[in-house]
Image 1 (spheres, rainbow, N blue to C red):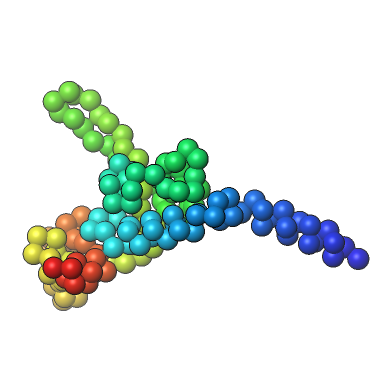
Image 2: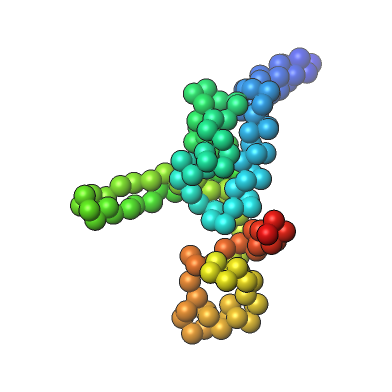
Length: 149
């Protein structure tokens, strides 16, 4: 009896999907996932992502990567970082974007030696207080980086 109404509502929902706003939307999202998922650091300012993704995405107006990241919180997140510029004596805020999936992986690669630490080495570092996650990268990157060397 109300099948026509259900179909009409479903069609309206589909039309409002951000995936269908532009024919290149999926291509932009996939490009960002691939690049951000294999990058040494998972969180970077949008200016950095532009250097590896290209200046502008194809599917959003105005053509800004941060707008694409904002419209797809299921994949991308945002952090605000503070940077103190001692020379000028001011504090600057940066919007940094990351791929949510990367946050689920443990960082196990030493960025100085590009060597993956064993689980025993990581456990020992945690035990003696020398474990510093900010000085470790994702294993996923290590695999990709070693192939390109």
